[in-house]
Image (cartoon, rainbow, N blue to C red; front, side, top):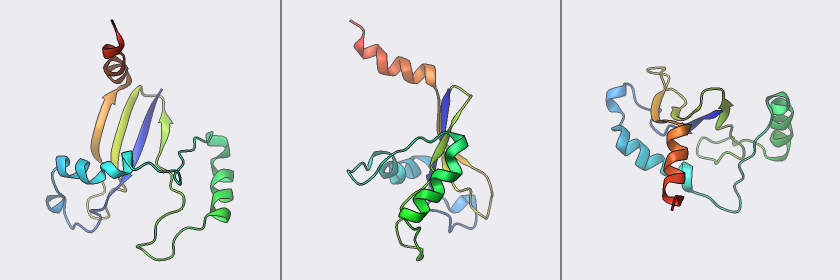
Length: 121
């Protein structure tokens, strides 16, 4: 199994892909989405069969923002995939060019090896 995760694009204003910074800049600016942990943020995994029910419950408890600059109380960031890879894309694809920008795509086997290699004596 793997995961597909979409990171919010702060460059949705761009009229063309040429106006978007290089991928290295994008990753640097989006890293807070990956590592900005706090005791007020939770990652919840919900089975697909309960997805709608969960989102409805959360919408009642944590209303979405009404102003564009308000923070979101709940956001769907990704899903489990059959493909054994970890995929991070810029989300949503902008209105102007309608394609995902792949930020990170790595096989689970490579990630597992990177994690376990230092632990081998």
